[in-house]
Amino acid sequence: MNTLEDLSVKDTIKQSLTRSISYQDYRELVSKLAEEGKTSGPEQTEALINYTMLNNRRMKRWDKTVKISEQDQKRIKSYSQNITWLVITESWCGDAAHVTPVLNKIAELSEGINLKLVFRDENPELMDQFLTNGNRAIAKLIMIDNDSGNVIDTYGPRPSEATKMVNDYKSEHGKLTPEFKEDLQRWYNKNKGQNIISDVLELLAV
Image 1 (tube, one colour):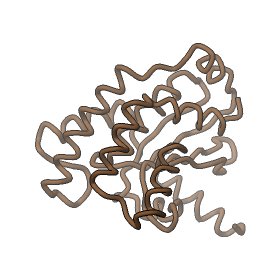
Image 2 (cartoon, one colour; image 1 turned 90 degrees about the vertical axis):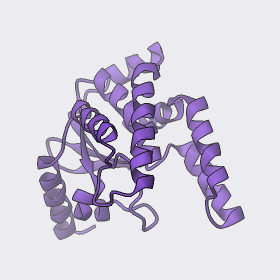
Image 3 (cartoon, rainbow, N blue to C red; image 1 turned 180 degrees about the vertical axis):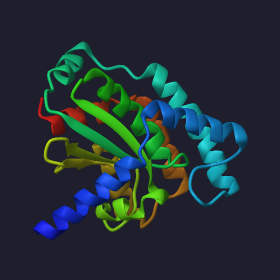
Image 4 (cartoon, rainbow, N blue to C red; image 1 turned 45 degrees about the vertical axis):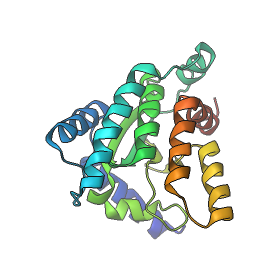
C-alpha cells in the first residue's frame, strides 16, 4: 500500500469514527429495532427483521454468559498499547451477533482498548477497504493505533475454527446450505466465544 492509499484509508477511518457508537449504545439500538420489528440497514425485509430479533436474543445471552479465564484476563489487562477497535457490523448478521459481545468483554478488561461500532451499509467506503475475499463480510474488526492512526491488524468476519469449517464446506459443496448454517450456530453455542478470545489474544501478542 502506497502513501496516498495509506492517507485515504486513514481519512476513511477518521470519518467513520465520527459515526461510530459504543457497544452499549449498539446493544440498546438493536434491542429497540427488535422491539419495533425493524432491522439496521436500508433493506427492511421480513427475513432480516427476524434475524435482528434472533440476534438480539443471542447477544443478550452472550452478554451474560461469556466467560474469560483468569489467566486470559491477566493477559488482556497486561496489554498496554493505546488502540481503538472499530467493528463493522449490522443487526441482522449472525456471525456479528456471536463475535461482538466477546470483543466487548475483552475490551472491557483493557484500559488501552476503546471499542467502537459502525454499520456496514452506512459506511461503504470503510467496508470496501476491508473486504474478505472480495466480499463485504462482517463482523470486521479494525485495530487502529491511536497515536499514528495506522491499522495494526484486522480480524473477522469469523473466528479461525468457524472460518475453517466454512472454507472446508464451500470447497466440498460449493456453497453454504441452511443445514450447514445451523451446524455453524451450534458450533458457536458450544464454543462459547473461546476461539474468539484465543484468536484475539494471539493478535494482541500478550
